[in-house]
Image (cartoon, rainbow over all chains, first blue to last red; front, side, top):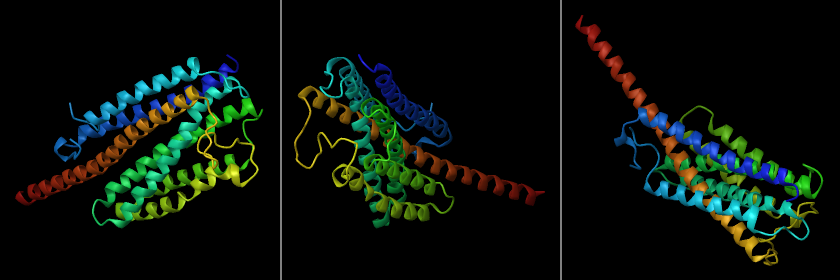
Length: 44
Length: 246
């Protein structure tokens, strides 16, 4: 496959950035959830 | 163990999004053919086009939620959180559009960047929403923040048609849309089109998952502030009672 470096880099940046945002979101949710009682979370 | 921001629905969305994304990556690299003109560089399209469309979707969602936030007397802050969460995700997708577009441009045009109408208007849209997120971080009353940022979101969304039709309105290095073009003529092979739409579906699910989690995260941050404030007031009262007794 020609230009595999650029193609791979595009995909790694795309999937990697989205995965990083998801991981950061879940980590922050874990921290804050521990401080807020479950009965105050309307989605539960 | 405390329950976090996830529910059965978000877990289902997450799993389906992962499966569809895996299919898109496999199809983009190993199943779809190379383009007759652009060769293998077209494989970047399956990431580039969906990120652009989802960025548009995110900014339109921000505008709609902002409209509700301004119009409604109740749940104003709830709509404002959806607007903020959607803009955050939209800015990430817009950044990815610019980066993947730049890499694709290097392969097809021989340059990472040109001050071309499509690229310039896209960059302008990205900077506008970075500004919107900056305005959201200004300290103050949450309702005032919601009103201020809603007005900005409703104005900023007007840039989207300008970005999308920039390739038709001005002479542009960027190719015209292969799918959503004014002729209504789809210029893609069946499998390539299916993979492209799979990418749009995968990124739409990821967008929904991220927005749901991030707006709940904002709600948790607000609740944490209230819980902290209640605890501080109780502690101060207890101190007062203690000192009065002595």
